[in-house]
Image (cartoon, rainbow, N blue to C red; front, side):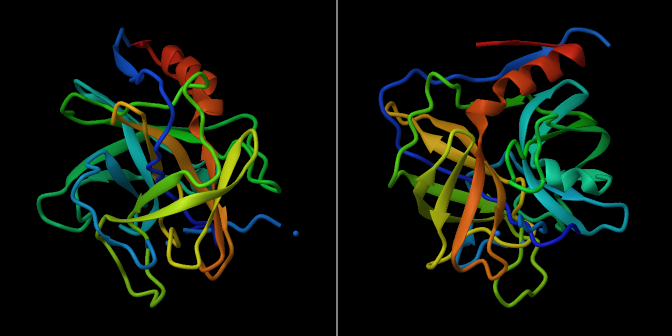
Length: 256
């Protein structure tokens, strides 16, 4: 595990905008605190099936993430750059990353956003490429044009991290909070009533557009060590150029 970072998912109600999906196929070949945790005061999540667990070679949870592309024998996961301080061995899909019916994929490459700044947490985005038979799957990503996140926007956090008891957890959990602060690259939320914690870092934050469609709007980045005060997620909209260019360089064709 890496430091004291936490990860979050955001589900948000946004203004009018058309939804966007990153649809891809293979064309050919104070100090920022790091760490990983479970959703505090959350509940089991049966909805966000693209939420994944990032596992090391010792079968330990490192972080959470979101499967944004699954095609043929290849997949792509969006997570936090600080999660890639460790080597990701496998990525698991399923409501319980230790269950016998989980699906496991081999991680073959991991890339951090070139603009990631550990001291501030800015551009805390990373991508992990997978190998293994995939069901067709794509997460809808929030574009800059659609990003109208605002103070008070409800956020649904999802991840596989620990709760305040620090007891081992392997279940996908979720909790809903609200945006309390915005910058050009991040959004912050109050966690006095719960939220992401160790192991939730890198998890997706889903925003809900006016038409009801959910989009991936945030990637859980960091927060206070107690997981009781505040959390911060990176705004996916600012990472879109990085994501699109990286996928193109790896032989994926993506379109709106």
